[in-house]
Picture 1 (cartoon, rainbow, N blue to C red):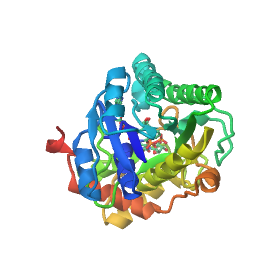
Picture 2 (picture 1 turned 60 degrees about the horizontal axis):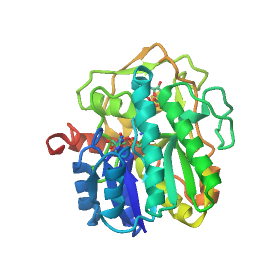
Picture 3 (picture 1 turned 135 degrees about the vertical axis):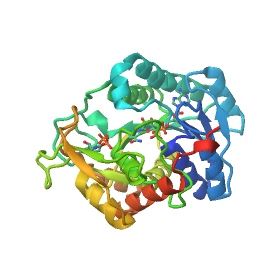
Length: 341
Ligand code: NAD
Ligand code: UDP
């Protein structure tokens, strides 16, 4: 099938393009390059030997969407990655987040109708589970958010679910990602954050590269084995393969499904630091600092629905995640750097 990837030049989109091409599908990316470089898709082509065409355009613009739907033939399904994703920034610029992340979905759904495309997989997040929950998190648990970014995911889930209830021909798969890290093992594509990274793994990589002098570990007084926060880290290539399974499911099954994409296992901040040090033979200096506001002690998925419904489960371990993250950083100290344009 031919799959449109909105936000397809980004971190998860580019890895998903590789997995789709490897599974024998065709891809078309639509990206406004707000947080990505066209170089990522050139490298997807180099890795796979396939075609990963990019339509430069905005998902909130009907004409750009029409171009993407028309440029390479009938689109059978969409994977909707496009959106702003920085939690902290969403608190200071809520309107930008609500406008971009919601308008993109509204306009996309209308474009899908115009172009007779009836299957969509949406990038949601474990953040929609809110804070007070029993672990592991199951898809039928109550939802609620703590920041505008999270609410945009929550609202998009609602909009997509309601549209699928109103139109029996529409298929929606809402994927709730846990913590994607790592990079393609080739080291050719990976996460390229601008400025000082907010997330743990890109921060560790920049400490390892000598760009930052130490890691701040946000709190060691949580009720966890070593006192540091526990999360469900998932290799981005496993996540990408989860999207292939989800989109193949979506085209065959109208209605809405919500599916966690995680490993079902939790690792602490210090587990990550020590694994990264061991597999890469490096030291990561760190300091314990106060908790980061809004963080919770422990988050991990119940990953059983993905296995049952999509016949998918994560297969790469924490060693691979740490090795591949460093391999990408080492080979691309400035991300896509001078190849950015
Ligand atoms: P990313 O920023 O690398 O990719 C998002 C892409 O969307 C970027 O390439 C950006 O240029 C593009 N974009 C943004 N607004 C657009 C618009 N209006 N029109 C066209 N393109 C637009 O982020 P990512 O890490 O690859 O995340 C992909 C999706 O997954 C996002 O929706 C994100 O919120 C969600 N998600 C990510 C994580 C994570 O940890 N990375 C976790 C949960 C959910
Ligand atoms: N963390 C940390 N130092 C950092 C960044 C993150 O100690 O510089 C911790 C954070 O408190 C959380 C875990 O690492 O326990 C994962 O954080 P990240 O921001 O990567 O993802 P989140 O789970 O918050 O979405």
